Image (cartoon, rainbow, N blue to C red; front, side, top):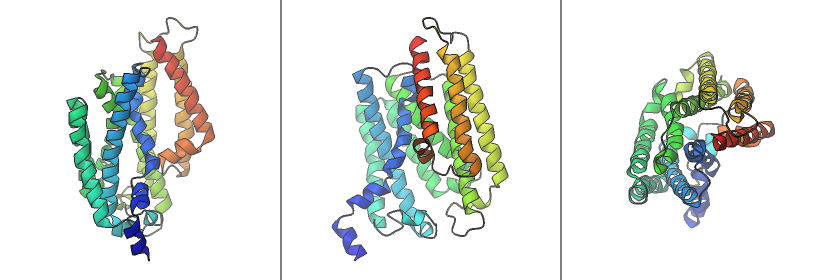
Length: 300
């Protein structure tokens, strides 16, 4: 009966397999334009919407290929066994076919409708992520670097699409902020899987929870330092507003990091998008930070 249902309509399973909830990560494409105060025009928004769609297609391709490759191992995992491919709701050949098609089409479309740097970055992202699926996720530390770089690429691609120079503070804060979230996720997975069998991420048995805690704490500290240096550098003093929004935004940024660290410390930061979207205090702090950051950029 299950196989007949899949043959009749694999589309709902396919939609779930590309993980729409995780598309929120691709909203990082607006980071560089927002930092440069370039968001508020229709041509820019249209370009960013296109880049968002292209990056979403690339990430969907990676999800499908990864799930098809790991289907057998995922079936032994307490939560991943519910993924459409592992659960038998989406046939492995279909996942490979759709994932491969998206992996080819996204860079090709980007090469025709976006700057060459965008197409090159998407191709590099796909190559790196596919290498991760095949072997790099089994290499200590390199797996953290690859996933972190994927987040950083999302933040960089918006700047490349619009020809916006990327500051060192933007790259440092974004990169180490991503490492903070990635290592906190690994830490949470390691805590949750302690003493259990069926972990599909083999490296969780090689990392110690103490090491992963050290990594997310170090990354959080560097991200905060980078943001503070941006806020306090010369030329960052407000000239037209009554309040120094750049400097004040540090408070909200640090509070957001501290609030997220609560979940990391508890070992419940396994899905960053669920933490960010599901915790009301963190959402409020994030909105306050966005408002302050927006005022700071507008006044720069």
